Length: 72
Image (cartoon, rainbow, N blue to C red; front, side):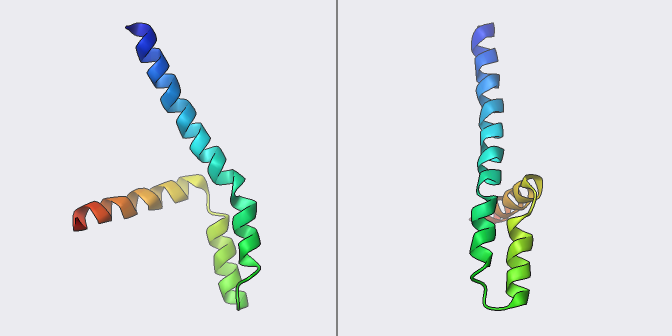
């Protein structure tokens, strides 16, 4: 039983690390897309969003999900 619990915790930790790694791996792709913005202001906003930390992204995502749950 102890082994099962430890395995479960390990999977949870690894999946969290994988999600953050995935988020950071796409940063260059997101920045590249900013080059197609029509104005300098749009490009700066795009770059600001593209370089947002994973923690900021996660907080915003959770907030949006909570708001969606309230509306449902």
